[in-house]
Length: 297
Image (cartoon, rainbow, N blue to C red; front, top):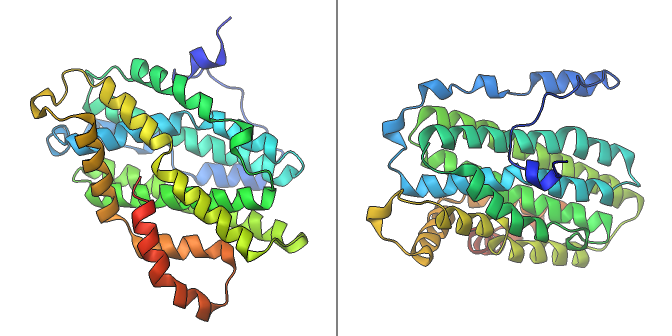
């Protein structure tokens, strides 16, 4: 029997058609972009194939997104007491995250066909899966929602920056789709947090602590793990550049941090605090400086 970990990253078998129990969700899913919408055959290879930075950024993102079902399973179990949240996590969030992984994988394998994606992903997942545990989630369901808002802020900023860096039209379109999905995910997590907060409020100090704690973790996150495994498995690609992993990592972090949409990130980060408008305005500048340092993947 093939285990779940052995199947990870490999094309899935045909699945049974989804039920029509939730007509609203079905209609929404139908309107969502599909892999068939991405014009892979029209990729301008000359605009991206020699871009070493984009190679590392896209490969790393494809790994993290492909492994998202492991995290989604833990998160779904964490919110088992809240059927509406659990249903959205399993029916929409996980599906869209995996679609991000599949679409990015198809893109990078089209542009860099000599890279052994499956081998590199398997080595990444062996390490990454050890980090995806129930214990890594905040016990309080309200505060875990706050943490999720931070993560979605980070991914929104990441794909926003990648899209701005892209010089290849098909990639620009794809990154726009993913960025928009991440904004939608943030809005869902924020809405669920507000719902939980209204029933049993948690103090702003604890919310701020959860925000700061998760911000600190972003730099030493799954993206860092992914980058190391991409570098270790790149083979002869960009061998003429003769860069060490530390050089590559510092360049990538600098590239992301300097292109970070700070204003957008701060607006998103402050939302879970549910602050009065005047106070939120006063905090915007210092939080902006902090976000630029800590969202720099």
